[in-house]
Image (tube, rainbow, N blue to C red; front, side, top):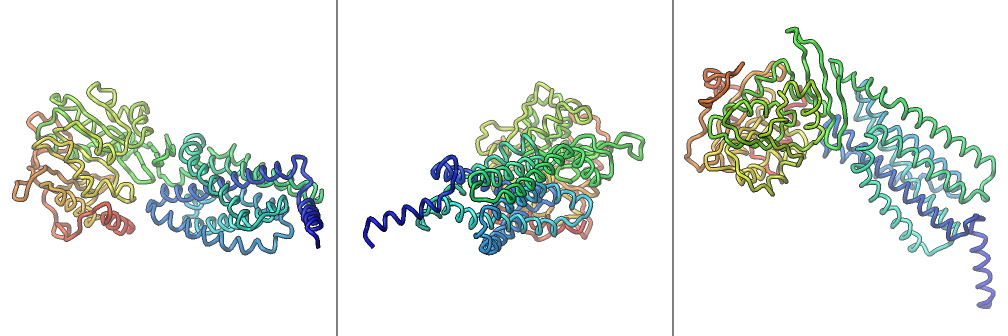
Length: 537
């Protein structure tokens, strides 16, 4: 065959392969790659939504992320193989896959939340949903590759390069949009529904329009009806989402919920009821864990704050404690000249400042002119801090996630030393010596390993049970441990006095210091202790 004949034959094959699209082969290819971009972005958002939801509901973010990613990647391989027989009808098959993915992915957060709230089968449900979503995402690539080749045939390597370049860029955009746009604007539940709608339009309508002259009218009509039904379901659930979420969330809490919101950092819930004393009982929960009950929180916060205030306290640093209850206790001292409060979540400090049930409980502490509130990660804030303080109060949640475990590490307490004046005192809430003794003594061991002299103590808080703290001051080996006492200018307290403090240093035989390891960034043993001990309660 001559060169001219071969060229003519190749041109005829390309013409036959190209769709009869009103935008031409170049425009059709650009539109299809744009569809790939949007589908990739949606796929990554589904993955991130599942991992974030698991972290909020269950904790143990490393395990949640590992299970979701591993199950989805495995399912993607299965989906790619399963799509091979569908390539002969690639247009209809791809549209059907995307419609189903939009429905399952868009509803995935809702389904898992309901499974957690009502059925208590979260982990099995998460594995099933992750597998189905991964299966459908895996089926996309072979079908899209077939569609691209129908528009214009390429060498396999070039086609794969174009496909994956657009796919990875879409994943990047989806990964950035999830925390920066979707969560702040829509929240987890509604965000998933919005992404599902985008997925349905990008994956079905665009493809059907590009290949409309290569697809039978009955097939096009049927697929468009399916897409309309998917959008109708997602839209209906979107309208009802707030009511569904409130109803499901209430199943998780004994008392009526008066405020609830999901932030990029945590799930915040405030409940209120009438306690056995006849007083209103306001409770704060972060990611499902009780932070305080207004009936007895004064016991916790008096024990946390006042022993540390026995030294100099003109300048005080509070790390955590965004509810401002520890701040309230600090501000009761007239000699306090300035307080810096560092809490990660601006939503928490906003509630403490402007939500009446909290602001009244904390005595409007954040409005005090002596207070500067900073919303930042405490670890990173300490790295750049220049000011020094007389007293530091550390009131973080228990170290049951990797993000919190770093705030209970040797490295963190080394950083803390940068902001301490000579003779400064530090107090750390350290969990329950009764329910989690290894975790408690690991915190004390970690603080000691960072170069502090420590005094551990414990009190009873009815809402929590037995609870413990560590009072510390920088010092070399042989230096005296800090004395547990009240300051001469201490205000009148409801729970704490010198007799209670003397008793607080006495631990029963079965809860005395244990041989445990210090926790570091590279070896966060306190995280494993916490997970293992609290899983039985």
